[in-house]
Every structure is written in structure tokens, then in C-alpha cells.
Image 1 (tube, rainbow, N blue to C red):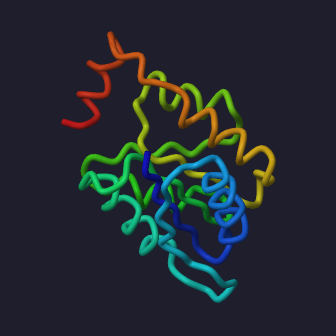
Image 2 (cartoon, rainbow, N blue to C red):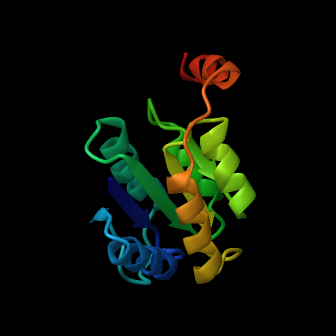
Length: 142
């Protein structure tokens, strides 16, 4: 499984922590940056990850900014992306189970490294339930 990651300056430390977590767990990763605290624009990073997932180059994406809001809104502008802003493991689980999310977004202001890794693990281990949810996801895609 190949995972794309990116963050703006507000989320780069949390992104780097999750990158290490994924690599240690044996996942293939693509780090789209940023890797400094110098100010950057989160839509640029959402686009990089979103395009990598939408075109099939990566299976899932991880995006982080200060609150997670701006980067998730930006990612959801890309056709084929279902980016879910998550704050806990239950949200991460149901974003996959019911919404077939393919990008998880987090806010570094609200999520610590331990919780972020737990949410990421839950997200990646949860399969889409399909059934009535497939109809709803189809309507979102339309």
C-alpha cells in the first residue's frame, strides 16, 4: 500500500511523525512536503496529495494543517477525492466504513502524535462497508 503525505507549515511536524510511523510499519510512502516552518499555502499541498490519490499513483493520502479545515476543503475540490477531517479514531473508522474516504486530514493544533498514529492506523485498516453506503458515495461522486 502506497501512502501520500503532505502538510503546510502548521502541520509539518505531525506529518513527519506519521511518515516515520508508516515507514516503520512497512508502508511505501511519498512525502510531498513541506518540511520547514516557513509559511506555505495549504491548497498547494492538498493538490499534490489529492492528485496522487485521484490518479491512482497512491492508495491513500494524509494531509495536515493547523486546524485541518483548510487542507480538507482544498482536497475535496479534486475530482475523486473524499477527504475526511478527523479528530478521533471513531471518525477515522467511519470515514472509511461509510464514506470510503481516501484521504484523512488532521489539525496539528488538536491532534497529538500518538492519537494521529492511532487514527491513521484505524483509517488504513478499515474497509469500506459498501451496501447502502455505496449508493451515497455514488451520489457524492456525481
